Length: 192
Image 1: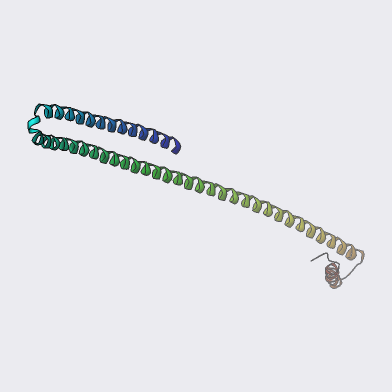
Image 2: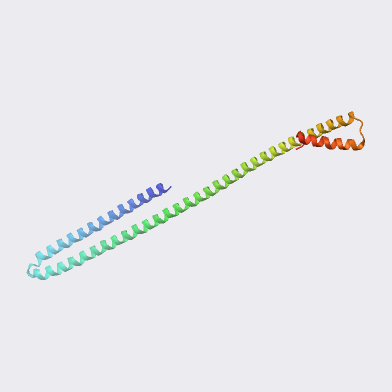
């Protein structure tokens, strides 16, 4: 976009400079024609009035100098106008370029902010998925450990019952036997 604008600006500037150059040549051509016309007129008058040549010569020179001063002033004014137009065009171009750069940076900041927000969102989703998977693993592990404990308790009860049922014991002996079985289960690591 900037390249297209620069190309169009240079083309317009080239057209403006071409027009200015053409106008300059026209002014110079007019000045030369005027000068030639004045010179021709002064030569004719000089021939006609040879007796008063010094008087007429001074008068014609003065008139010629006034005309040349006018042409020089016109040309100087036109050059000043062209310089002002060039400066104005350059300043407008700089302002346009600044606006384009500012717009590009604004868009870049927006895209970067959007990208960072999406990245953060994706990261949070990944972390949440990992946490969910970890919680599920913990629950599975807990469930398996509880099953193992249940199996150990059942096994311990079966063993205790098999020992107790084989013997006909008093209530006190049965309680002692249960405590002894629990202690033995702890030493055999049935209960952690």
